[in-house]
Amino acid sequence: MGSKMLKDANRFVASLKLLCQEKAEDELLYEDDIQISLVKHEMSLHKLVCGNLPVLVVWKKLHLPQDRDETEDSLPSEDILNEEEASEQQNDIGPQPLSLTKARQLMSWYTMSQNPNMPSALCSPLLPLWVRCDMSDPIGTTWLGAEPVSTGNKVSAIKLYTVCSKGATEDKSSFLSLDELMQLHQKRHRASAVETKGYAQYNLFGSTVVENTVIESQCSVTAVFKWSNVEKIFQMPPQSSEAVLDIKLAIGDLKSPLYETYKELEFLEALAQGLQTGEAEWPDPTDPRSAVDLTKALVEELENIERTGQAQTGKVVEKEGKTEMPAADKGISIYGSAGLDRGDLDFTDQLWVKMRSSVTSYQDIIDCLKMVISAVKHGKIKPGVPKNSRNSLGRLILQSYKQQMEDVSLSGLTPVHMLLEMGLDKMRKDYINYLIGRELTTLNNLSYYLSTEVDLQEQVTRVKKLHHLLEILVICSTFLNLHYECLFPFIQSCLKYYKTSPYDEEHIFQMQIRPVMISNFYQKEEPIVWGVEVFSGQGSREVRTSFHLSDQPLVDHVTFSADFNKTTVNGEKEDTAFFSTLVTHSLINFI
Image (cartoon, rainbow, N blue to C red; front, top):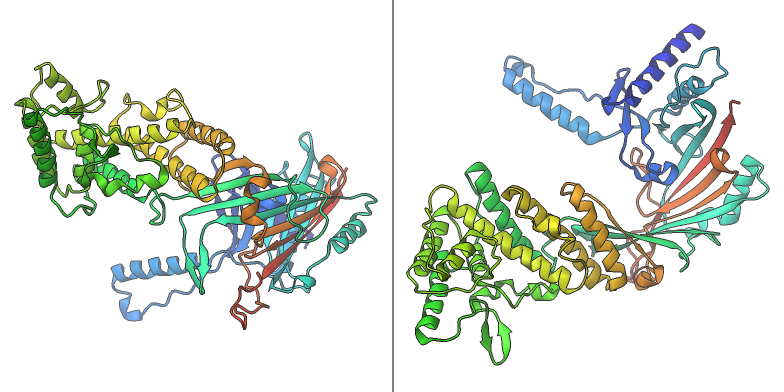
């Protein structure tokens, strides 16, 4: 019996050790129904308990029966489809818990492997181990965890965690009091002096529920508070708290004030895709008029100006002392709500605005550019463009000023290339106007995003990064009404991040902030997570007991019973129901 247990323990620990090696797989199957995964990205519960340290997670993997008609056995294609469907169903079930008996057995093997007092320690220090449990005991155990404590390269102790969970309830009197939690900690650890730390999260912006319907948002802004010397359960974070805003945003939200700018970027990406693949999926036009008609109207307007001898600025039309865009360009007036409206659109900017709202084919681009180039070449129009124009059409127009305009063949991908350059040029100037106009950065800091030394695909990616940051900035300035002192350092850190990181809408940007700046948004709201930690001891010998309350369960592998009503008799907003999670902690010394 003892030799078999040692053999099983060795095999289990060998599997853990394999996952801890560099370039190893992220998961493996131990026995037929036990999966071990290396979790490098934070899980909500582990972030609260272990920070961002990678952990090994053990859970039960179910094998679903594959219902297959015997008459289909002779059809290989049907067999493959059934296997794929069964695989998809299995993936949908998600991680399942182990029995407490099995979880404790695995935990004992792990602990034994880390004990240097054993006849032969089975391996060097491993990553922390967490085992999903089925909550079958009276205290509702949902996780067992273990974390080695090392002195040099040798394990000197091990920390054991037990996580107990309860379903949601609106009855706040049923939760542990702070005094009860402190007494529990002192009893377990015989600590004469304890300290406390508080933690709270508030959802400031994101998905909302209206009349039992979830209105999804592609942006989330969460305020995270940390403070010392907690006074009571559900204490409001004091103004002395450390506060951070976690901001995540996916562009393209219909409710965003920059949605029209996003549509402009979307057209830019369609052109870039056309250059890369030779095929493009054209977005639906936003202007009912054809691209050729809009371009013709712009050219005729400039021809009339030439004939009448009026001063041609090539930028804007002046009316009653007020700078306005031509009527056809007012499709982008949504810029005004986010401060992106520019009064200095040059000719190529105006042409881009018209074409991006109406082009539906490759031929449209050829016809429009041919019309413009012909009018410029024959001196019918003299559009205004800046001397440092970065797009091909702008440079041709500058050449026409000196009657040195070179011939351009509008064949192959050249027309798409020219239009894409116009869009990049125009959108970069939009972003420069916003960021520098508000003194949020400098041209030097934007040099990475404005560079034309890289290929067009990379230029589009960098403009997309700027747009992503701008949407985040607009949320912070318009919805949260944050001041310059918050926005300036934040945008510097964001620009720095994207200079070395790929485009990522899942990335969480963080802003350090003083609680008083956002007090109006959270002080009348319930937190989405609230926690308190009682601790004693120092360094690696520190022991903790923590209690967490959350509007969503911190455990995803068990089903909780609901002890609350979803509606109230008078129709008023009901109290938030909270799930409770208690994490107890023990320290076992080996040396």
